[in-house]
Image 1 (cartoon, helix red, strand yellow):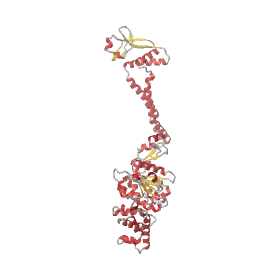
Image 2: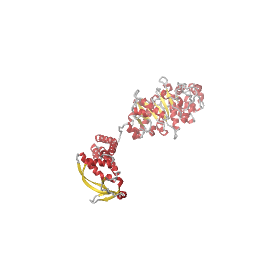
Image 3: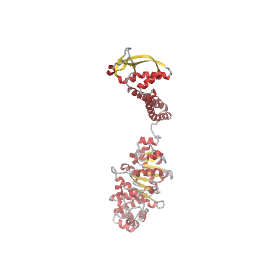
Image 4: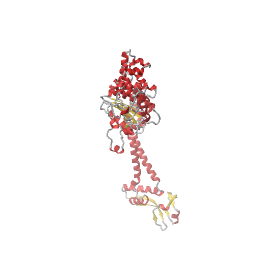
Length: 527
């Protein structure tokens, strides 16, 4: 669309600024007309004389010719017309004039009659007499003041709307009209257009006094609640303020009484949000708040064992698929035997015990003693998982028992998955397994009326590949469990397998409208 074509359309449109003054003038006229219609016929009759007397006084004219109608008493005395003596009617005078009123029967019986009289009168005297006798002491200014106030109120109300419209029209005349693509709007405009009532992000650190007094933050960019399950991607280097976005999100989730699963590798959120009275737990074997947990408790059916094992032995592009599938199948079979964590670790660390458990099954061939290199590779993978499970607390070391299966049904309390840099690598298989299990169980527990669970996955690149993450970002929209993913930068997206998988999925969601909320498609992140 050319700019000339854009300008030609404006000549056919009324100027909003001039329209405001027109409406204000219309409000003045309408208000004055309504007040004038409320007057009596006698006030209407006298008003032209009152108006003339005020005009002549303004021009400093001393006297003018007036023709008044008086009441003639039986004693030939002239009296000013009084409302109490008049009734609605039409009276024809001898000079052909018609009065919009007549005498009441009572006044007629008293002998009152109409008597026209013309003479020179002092303009000041006429103005004072009519003002006090017929208009309750109101000057012309007093009469017009209410109408002017109505006009001023109308003008201000119209200008509050038309000035922004005029400014927008002026900008469009200069720059052209936007037909499609992103548009720069204010926080208030975004919230109003999107009808945003969900999670919000502060756009200003400090609140004004009025916002503090009302307990609100007027500079909060909000997302519509029905769009929260389209998930969030936050990317920023260390120190760029990712925490200033994620911490307010957790505060709002807490206020709303909803649950959160927080992956907190830097221990930024656990000290601030952990609440034991709410039923919160910490999934970290090195934390005294860690409850008793057994991987066998997560297997409700034999067919689920392989899914649990996949979280511990995810697919990788660098290793031979055989050395991933083999340990995965063996571990899945061992879970079906319902061992305790101590028993499972013993089996995985001792070859003879493992041979005895697998004897007579098709899995025994995977660790056949004659295939030394094959056997060594599978046993090494199993030993790595056993190394993490050695840290799990024993049944007698804790008073509480926990499983993802039961928690997904109740959804009581928050879950914090923590670690420290010194032990993060050793805890990595367990942390990834817990997250995968929670994602899986929460999708299966989706039903109407169940409160959502927020997944806060900060520093996602520090985890190993999560097989259920792809499913979470697609099907969690149906189960209404928002996922918040945090990365430090594009380098993590390029180098990390989990990050690449998440990024490909986010790009597909954006193409399908998942990120149309902000009119932003992060295709530059995922190439």
